Amino acid sequence: MFTLSRNFLKFTAASSLLGLTAISTPAGAYEMVQNLGPVGPYEAMLATIGSKHVVAFYVPGNGRCDVEAVIWNSDDADAVTAARMRISLNPGQTTSIDSTENKSLTLKCGDHVEKLSAVDTNQQFASK
Image 1 (cartoon, one colour):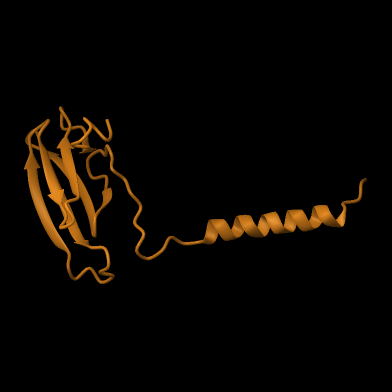
Image 2 (cartoon, rainbow, N blue to C red; image 1 turned 90 degrees about the vertical axis):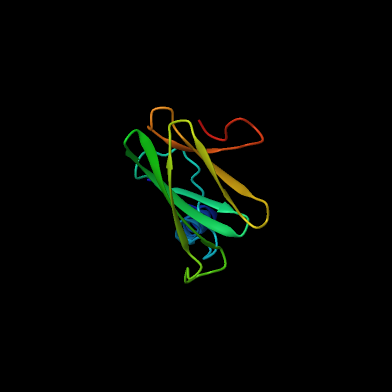
């Protein structure tokens, strides 16, 4: 059997405490996780565009991507500014959601309605 030094025990305790603190720290109330896809049917795409938050998903139907999106102000904790939009996209077709700060999120329906992706209009694709 070996004896553990006090420094080793202090280091282990401090490391454990630091690890638990990092794991249990919640994200801020105004921070939103980004998921720009590609996403499959019924999977949520999450984005922040300027001062707006967007949650979007799609349902395949009649050979099209039926996109549902909810947009609201990022400083609106009660989501009273929320607006819903529905758009039906043909395969390969895109649509854009714009903010007042000239920021834009462009969504593209996959070629075989298998996915919805965020498109970077300055470069060809943000995600494949």
